[in-house]
Length: 372
Image 1 (cartoon, rainbow, N blue to C red):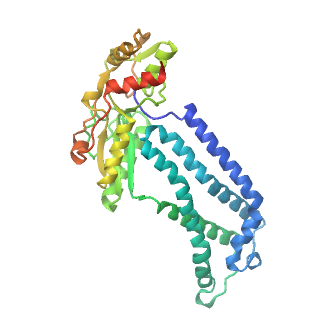
Image 2: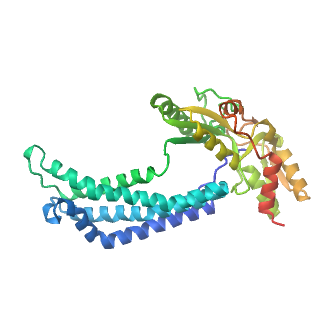
Image 3: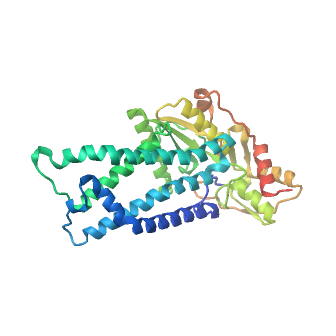
């Protein structure tokens, strides 16, 4: 059974978050369009007013108006974007991290506004006279180029101010190695990857991203950690038929439907790791980053079981049988046995360990999906 443990794009929860974010952007752009003339006047103040600007192209003024409306809308929607992202990841965070993330949104907004104020009141008045009269040549800028320059400067200085709120120097790149078709039957992969017979373009993209992250981390000293994830799951996982079989199996049991096993007589083995242990691995890496470090991230041998074994465990928790059928043809690129070798991860970060056993993961899923 294929186990790609992320929320599918079609998942209702993710779709609702994206829809609300899109609506907030639309509302922000509408507000920006209403106030665009005033904002353009405000943007032109450091240069001496809008009369100091000129438009050459027929549509230049209209394009400038739309640019200001769009940038304003995006800036207004940005805090709400952060809030929706927080809502999406909050179930996988510990209580302390959850509250710190929520409080960080308004604080980051304050830093963002501080960066915008710094650029507008200090940076622009200092830089513009020098730039406009460089070498004694007086410049009469076009409205499009001037507004593009000012809005870009204000926005990115604001982002830099918001970024200064956090460390911003530790990056984790996570992908799911079992999609790199038939590359290995275990996660003991060397940093030098090879693709013999890729069966789809997605694995090639993941392998390329893996290599790029390694190269940038090692050559430029960036604190980038590459985590090759196996079966990442938890009680809030939204599994579907072909992705996230543990979560989906419990959902099928709840609905009283029939589960389908694809190939290998149901004896294909997967190791499972709870999302809390995934986050704790990222935290340990952030404490002591190793640029370009590559780590396997899964449940290991202790948290591994076949589909039939998982069926039996869930049946024992539910106290009833689960109906299932068997399809001889396995998924293309599916592995028979997939167990993560965690030796390197545990050696580099001895404080990290698996804290949720497979039985505890299943108990949490059953308790969440089937409240008593």
